[in-house]
Length: 466
Image 1 (tube, helix red, strand yellow):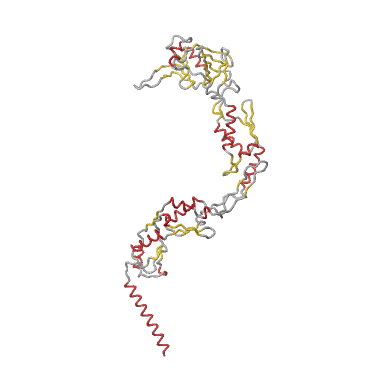
Image 2 (tube, one colour; image 1 turned 120 degrees about the vertical axis):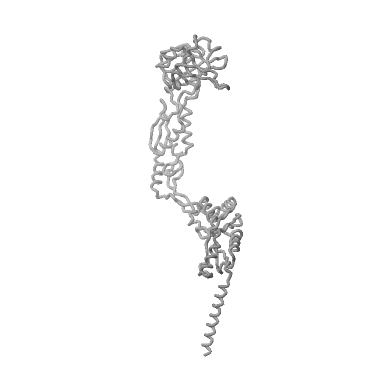
């Protein structure tokens, strides 16, 4: 009888407790979040919306930490207070409270009171970069650098070989910074570095068929040669030299030291270029004069360096003529050949040589020496020729030109200086150029200019001398 009474008493007490709990729940302040509510893991139960927002904001400003979990399971942390971290909480807390009130204000973990909300965060990126550089996963003594399989460097007397890949634990700093910034911006508490792809990855393995092919090709380069044919000369670039330029592979081809290849092409240009250099010209009078000038041979060094690297990557013996930025008529000391226009500035006479014989000549008037309009001596070439041209001097402040002269036959060879007819002159040759010469051009009698115009073409050498 006593046992039954005791059992009834306990049931009565439990019923009373449940009634009281329900009564207390119904009397709870509906302006407060229910007990057990958490936002992003931060307990805010029993707080109003504003109090909850202040609590979450305070947490991020003072207690927040981002845990960086390495692949070995060890975690390193970044404290929000160290990087000036500040998070702005969106207006979603009011919606949580409204839902709780609408659903009967059920509390406790089983009632779905744990919520995740995005935040808008700011922080000092400069300080963050310093913090990241000091992490053990970046500067620690146990870091093994991940590296792709590659081809060995040149070693005299040895074949090129494939060096196997290394699977290490080195971190890609740029990827780490990006992942950390994204986590901080979202208010996340943990970042798994491996899952976020922050570690360096092996992308080329030693069993790569492409790598094997390139390694074999590099060893093949030891037996190749490239012969440059320049006039009557030959320059042989041997495989022994070429292999010293090989630096491994890049993407899908052999890597060649650009500077070494460019230096070799420059050495050819230094020996064989004539454009811009001083040369000896044997004049009609029998005198030898030394003349500079832009006419001559000039290797296109940039284009030829690119071509040379391309040939090396093929690994095959070849013979070639270099690419030229400028070409002359012949090789040797007289690279202007035996067909050219010769202008004797002292003798005030012009000659046309063809295949070594004089086929035309004329007196002329060149630049006015007294006004320092001297026609410049040098080795040039005819730029082009044109009929019916207005030649103009410098433009004056009043908008007019220093002079405007119509010519029937215009044959420029050095900028604005050229051969042309001068119908306004009655005399040519002699000493006229010393006191009444041109502005630098070579004036010719109209009929002589016409016949010369018909006999020459663009590119013919034009040689002026005193």
